[in-house]
Amino acid sequence: MSLKNIAIKLETSDSYSIGNVTALLSEIAAHLKKLIASGEASLIDLKSLPFAPGEYEQLRQALDHGEVTAQIDAIGLSEIIETRYPGVWWLTHYNVEGDIVADIIEIAIIPSILQSQPEDVRAGLDMLQAVISQPIQQND
Amino acid sequence: MADHDTLAQRLIQQGISRRAFLKFCTAMASLMALPPGSAQAIAAALAQAKRPSVIWLSFQECTGCTESLTRSHSPTVESLIFDMISLDYHHTLQAASGFAAEKARDDAMKEFYGKYLLLVDGSIPTKDGGIYSTIAGMTNLDMLKDAAKGAAAIISVGTCAAFGGIPKANPNPTGAVAVSDIIKDKPIVNISGCPPIPAVITGVLAHYLTFGALPELDNLNRPKVFYGETIHDRCYRRPFYDQGKFAKTFDDEGARNGWCLFELGCKGPTTHNACATTKWNGGAGFPIEAGHGCLGCSEPDFWDAGSFYTALSMPATPLTFATGAAAVGVAAGVGVSLANSAKKRAAKAAHQPVTLNDLE
Image 1 (spheres, rainbow over the protein chains, first blue to last red):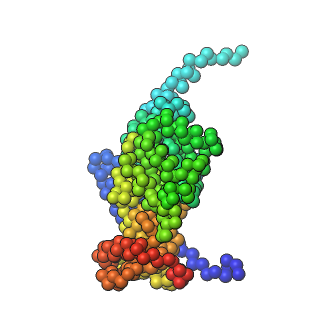
Image 2 (image 1 turned 45 degrees about the horizontal axis):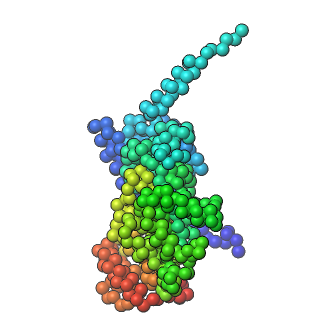
Image 3 (image 1 turned 180 degrees about the vertical axis):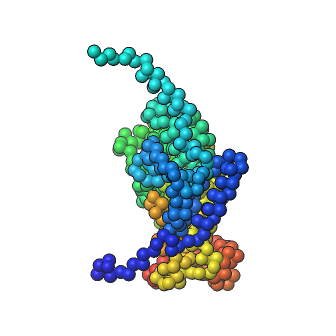
């Protein structure tokens, strides 16, 4: 007997739902209204939600891709995608092994993690000034 | 790393940028089940965090708890956390053995007296003076008492250390007890589960590292952020329970449709843990998602609470109050929960071994 003898029912990602996607879209809409009204950003931690099998993929499909995709290379990759709804960003942080360590939807004008951090800016300036202060090698 | 170094200094020395640190703190917030917006606050706290010494004692156990932690699918976060503590003694993980290993434990206990975290996995045999489990000629009982004296706090990892676990199951031949049955004068956190979820272990360590204090605990000394709700509360199959849709066997139409496993013995309604959201194997799923009911492994005496395959509404002794509650939804669930407590007591008093018939 092989695996071929076992009747396996393949389920598509849209074949199962307990309503999480609809609830999340409503929550995102409420956060977008807040962003428009006051400029206040919001975050939703997807790892804390009890998704039914397939619902995560359904949410991916519902939010889809927009115009912007960014990548950060810091202790593993991070993928930042603006969804088809401007102001709604999907942030997936991976570790160096490629496993997801944080999966977040950020409703903001621009995700905070994309902004340069003041400490890094200061360190960068120090590095730049060190380069400038080096004597320039003359090419004869 | 020098002990006076803060975490921020440590990361800078490793060439980790502030942005990477913020990413790490975002992952920590997720790990600790804190609001995702708290990453900035965590970053500020961690920047000042000192490196605590940790002594890990393994007693009457199967090493499953350590396996759970070391085979976790988020090694970067956990290795970073472990990089931030000084794990001065752990039987399984340390390179040293014999006298050198025991000296490492003694040295850490003296140097960090009153400050170190003591992690314990496994129950402690007490019968016949505790002779049924010894390390370097010392009983687990004596070693625990000795190590607990200078501990700032104790973290009981796994159901064995937290509640006695399987070694304590009837007839409990070694007189196994939980850490909290022996140590009464130290703060104790119970991270129950057989094994516990690795993210919960590191989440508690991260909380201590970040805030310098233990997280808020429930009535069984478990961190509320992870054990505050039942598996049932957060189960994706819960809507089927509310609709009265139950799988009757493991291969019927209901099972194939993913209906509630309550009638097949799922202990989700009385089990507090984070499996339904944190999940296992890198978030791939948890037992109910694989089609099997929850065994209730993070609750005291789960091994002696009757068959894993008998519905909670079918008490070990006749309790007409709860019989038939399975199909009528949430209100009945409250009664079931009460009945289950009574059932556990009854089952414990009259131990009912699981037979082959129970498994069919």
